[in-house]
Image 1 (tube, rainbow, N blue to C red):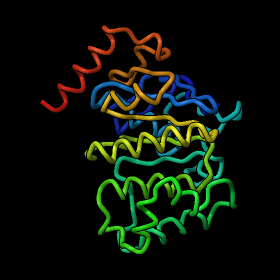
Image 2 (cartoon, helix red, strand yellow):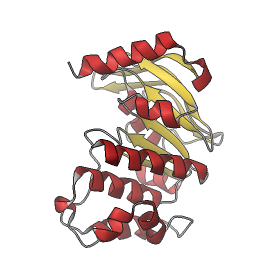
Image 3 (tube, helix red, strand yellow):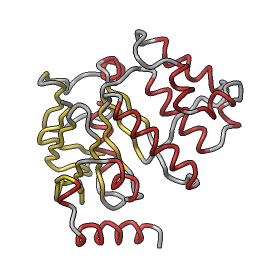
Length: 235
């Protein structure tokens, strides 16, 4: 289990997370939902070890990894796909994928399996990162993360700005990855996506967990509130 316990995170003097406690179990899809600025992306970065905790603890399978560096977190089978995607534009799609294999031992996920998951990447494997569409870049970012053979995959807004047909492909990939045994921690402003793929939800507001529960516990009132928050961010 990957867990944050009583975690406080600051950006300078501004506190972004207030005593956050979240645990992601193996083989589950856990969605962090809430309005923009609620602390969802910061929570992902804290779980990855990308930003330090002022207080609290980060654990993996019961072992304290609070002070573990970002590269060491990756080697401990945690992978983050940021909303910025961070594709290396001067390299081809396949070169981006090859880079991900250099610092990690071989495992279940190979470049061939990534191409099977995203056939479009096979077609575009020689294209430079800068020439890829937004959807292709997102596929590449997810594929690159999978090549580290993670047990925990953290996805930050994977469908943001994508066409509906591409969103369907990303959702199908998340479902497939989850069935393969990888736990997925998902941040997604489009509530329809986590509502489809996640079994458990944590609602964040102002850097705090204000509600958590399973899919069957999400009543009409909560769905209406989340939909209102989503619509408000695009008004």
